Amino acid sequence: TRRRISAQRNSQSETALETLKEALAATNINDLDEQDEEGAEVQRESDTERRVSGLGSLETFSGISAASHLHDYSVPASANVEHFRNSENLLRKDAGSAGRPRNHSEQPFHSPAGPVRMSTADYFPNGSATTVMMHSHRNRSMPSIRADSGMYGMRTFASTQFASQKRGFLRRKVPLEEMISYTSEPLTRSLMNLPREMNRDAVRGFRVIQRFMGNCDDDVSLNEKFADVLWLANVGVRNQPMRDEIFCQLAKQITGNPSPAAAEKGWTLMGVLLYAFRPTQVFLPHLEAFVDSAPISTLALKRFLRLQLGRVRRTGSRTSELTVKELRLAMTVPSRPLVFGGALGEIMADPELVNRNTGLPRVLEQLTGLIISLDGESTEGLFRVPGNSDAIFMTRLRIEAGQLEFSDITDPNVPASLLKEWLRDLADPLIPESMYDECMANPSDPAAVKDILERIPDTSLHVIKYLLGFLSGLLRPSVQAKTKMDSSNLALLLGPTILRNPVNDLKDMFANSSGEQTFVQTLLDNFASS
Image (cartoon, rainbow, N blue to C red):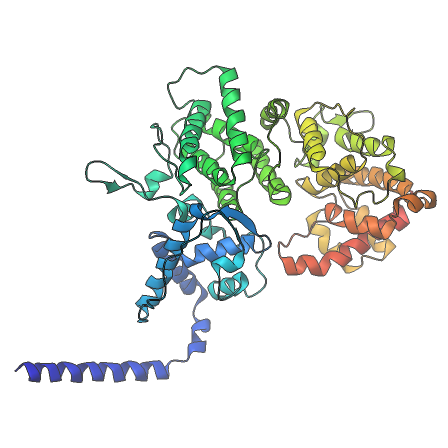
């Protein structure tokens, strides 16, 4: 009887297998791309939600690499062991569901002690990040710096990077939502997998955040809060693994905080700490997505945070610890009007930021005046050679804090670098983005360029005329002989600050860079003396 039942089952299995083969043979794989786009999108979202609800997702890793494929980053191996274990387990699970037997040579990632230099290849040993992105998106063009924002966020990051936490007599696992949400209780260990010797600093840092935000019962004076913030900032400067931990703790205390005032203090502290250090390349896109999606109480504060994140993406972390003077200045910036990153119209409407006699932003006049007074006209490589990073940081901080004292600045490359930053950080470029395609159509035609200038807003035209007048002095033959900077060189460096490509795609940016240079050079050669 057993043999007969077994034979029947084998026959049924063979019949089912043959039916499946026939169905697969009749299916044209290319037809999958012809499916309704909406249905395919729903399926992708469903897959993402299913995977994120577990330990992580393949989309998460492809998103991380898309944001970090231009840079390497150094992180301690011990802080990332769990991340690699989780990712490898997920890959095994996906492969196992397709029927592939487990390869016993696949072992969890074990890293030697000490820091490891990691790049995109560490996440994708068999292919580039671009290849993975192409598999998960219909758009086959080069991915932009900020890819699909749905891949990023605190939940996605925590699912792969947070340490597993348990509590109670039965040692039940703490839910992920609870780990990334506000708590009035102190932490007993770090949120992430940090080296054991940093656990004490992580616990203390969380207490500092609670005290600063006013979510604990400690009676703390303003001087004590200031000392706490200075300690926290310099812990992040000294210890790279602590940086993501500190930002994760802040995000946790902001999420679901019952006090809007306390949440606003948390956002302010985040902006201040970004003056001292930046998140790692892995966490930066997740923090950007968190800021973009958060209901921040004031628009100015959200723009300040976006500006800070954009700045640290370009400049990185400090190499020296934050001083008391620097922190005092940084603490005043979030409550002040934006000088860097503000809209030109808002700057012109603020009496503190504009010279009423000339109708020009004070910062523009101050920086160009500094360049001339510091003998920038005799400095070789002006606008090409960057200034000292610490001097640029301190000078910009003073300008943002409203303290316009520059007696200790001796290098004209410092104000020249800041002038480029101010133009690049304007909320809206001097040439409106809506006119970008017109600028690229005939960039070398003076008549077309003049027509565009006549149609831009009056405030932008006023600033451009002043800027061209300043640059015309640098284009005198006697000055060019010393600076080695002609109109072509200046146009190459200033083009991206005056024109801004509305398409955030690397391919398009590279393709249009020569057109931007040509347009600005046409401005300099034909209108600089106007």
